[in-house]
Length: 128
Image (cartoon, rainbow, N blue to C red; front, side, top):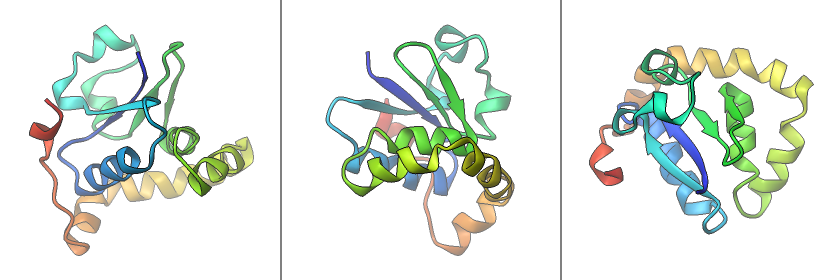
């Protein structure tokens, strides 16, 4: 089992980002799935639809669960090149603390942002 990035398949930013992760990830290091096709309770007792509709989650193969900006930075550690290096640098607790309000603002405004940038969502069928 690989680490699993769980995202909102109905969000343009989330869908674009998940495709970006797949394109740049280290081979066989991470699976990427929208929460809408997963049985969340079977994966981890802290996962549910309400939580996963508001934030991405990275579930590691050893059972660790990361979300918000920490989830982004931990995901970057599973990518190639500069993304991996940035993941290690940015996962510093101080940077995570400072980045979480930005993550939360983007999360609350993701529909408007997705529309503004012409990002499509609902690519759930690509993951089934």
